[in-house]
Amino acid sequence: MHIAERPVNAQQRPYLIAEMSGNHNQSLERALQIVDAAAAAGADAIKLQTYTADTMTLKVDAPDFVVQDKNSLWAGRHLHDLYAEAHTPWDWHAPIMARAAALGMHCFSTPFDDTAVDFLESLNVPAYKIASFELTDLPLIRKVAGTGKPMIMSTGMATVAEIDEAVRTARAAGAGPLILLKCTSTYPATPENTHVRTLPNLRETFGCEVGLSDHTMGVGVAIAAVAMGATLIEKHFTLRRADGGVDSAFSLEPEEFKLLRVETERAWQGLGRVAYGGTAAEEKSRAYRRSLYISAAVKAGEPLTPANVRIVRPGFGLPPKFYDLVLGRRASRDLEPGTAVNWDCLA
Image (cartoon, rainbow, N blue to C red; front, side, top):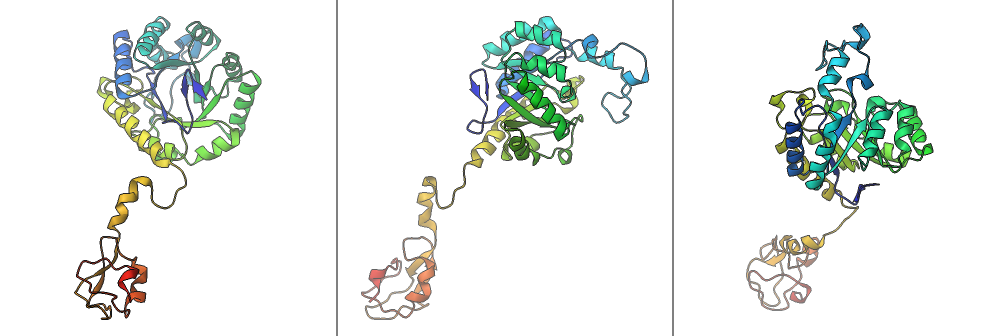
């Protein structure tokens, strides 16, 4: 799996996506500031969403088109109004992508219909993201797969059968490399509803890289996901949650994203391999194990006893396992306190 020139696999630190979504609050200047902040925070990519209110839903005043969940961040909002507020104007895409490229970041997007895919192809994006709510939109998956670009697909609420159908559809349509993201489609999500132990099974079942699209607060769940094999982490990103915006409540601020970069890389480094015994870095620490030392003067021929042999640090004498064997043996020569007990000390 590569996104542009960047490998995305277990041999690399996790690939980090800063999802801008609607956090630009309809200001191109703010959108560019978000790009700058994401690059400074260590993101590998900034991700957009490419749609209009009319490509997402219908502008009708009917209950189906109003958010009914009273616990939702968007309770009571008309879908058309919500998408109009959150969408990224299409003429912003090119300057946002140019700014990202200038800062050494990738920039790609989530398309929501065929026209968005055609538009993004005209901008030569390096990859595509399929949102969890669109995982069952097989015609859209077919369209994206036909580009041959890498596809990142959030699994959200999908059953194993639905994921299988999406993956088969993508591969049959000529998709490039696939990566499946564990995702909980609540905003925000709770750690206990994230289930990152699914990741190894997801990799094994579908034979592809896996990652996490994370709507939880903080970075703890993302770190756990890396420990379970995630090679890509996506988090919503904003300048300040206090600035408001449709996704701000569950987005990371720049200082938090910097922490995400540091700690996911540490988690990845810590995975290592199956290893026992000392590492090269630990070799000098062997000196501070316990070993047998003379603790009181012993004349040649005198027996070694608990009164003149102790188990202490450092570790230059015989290991403690030989303590009982050494007791009762006679000294081969005069031994001063602080002498490491070795076999040549014994008659």
